[in-house]
Length: 64
Image (cartoon, rainbow, N blue to C red; front, side, top):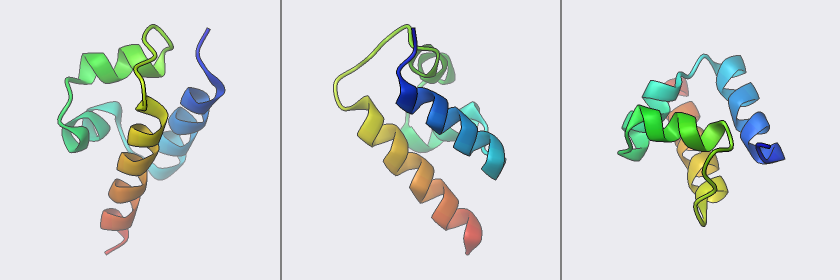
């Protein structure tokens, strides 16, 4: 079962119009890997912080 933080990330992505592909590109990751993590199939150490940081960075960049 996916962790709560993944649902929060996906919800925020939806609200801000950010795709998993955009998030993956920003993080330098394969989009399929991002999907695996967000769907709860993998729980890499430190993933929550990395995903939240990347989402915040994309959001800030989009506002400029």
